[in-house]
Length: 351
Image (tube, rainbow, N blue to C red; front, side, top):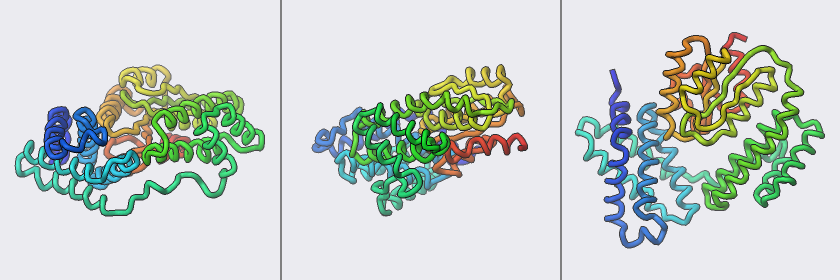
């Protein structure tokens, strides 16, 4: 029997555009005098409304109020970083509550209010967005100049820093997990808090991927193939692929033959290549909850078409951040970071 949370989630997905528009109408009615001051016109409100409804629907699907609360606190930090006052977050929640209570009959109201109340309670907690992801120990002497070079737009210098570390016997695995991973998280935090622009963030990600490409020949030379095969792909709509690429490369370091398909892959194409290559592991990545339905559909299709032929590992930032949400997809396992993927794959295959 479908849970009441899942019923709410399905209805939100079906009516998300109209619900978001209704939220916009309420918000603009209350703040028509100052909304333009912060660049929050109808289209921006609608975008935020749709994101928030997607987040709520996914949290409902997993019956996981803390998941939605975590997004609301992230949204507050992001808006603060872009000089938007905190009251916009409460305004959004109030509009969302009014619209949803109007859209659903009274039997659904307690569940809706439970999730929204969890978000409001989380807003009373301390904002931790000022905490850096950069390590104080370990590879600090590589991390600090690397992030500084790329934020200054010097990809050549950043590449030299990484190759120098490799020449000093720092392993590729340690570069991936001890340098690239914390730096990428930190750059995301700097954008969230308004300290850099989205252009800086995209440049950093693109440059890091290019440097990873320069390391791939070393991975190929170091790997001793063990005959095991994995296919790695981001679900349709998902454009964040660096974590998945790290997983694929680390699998290769452990001897796997990997077919890395990258971002935004159609479900049937992933299934077809997994069947064609007789993959034993299907590694799937998703960072944004808006792509949750696509991941569920892909896993269901893989079970239907491939049966027990392949084991499914899922990962991505939102997956690693919340075990309850990760479990809601019904995969064989979830990786909390790229470094876990090889060991999980071996365990699933009985190694």
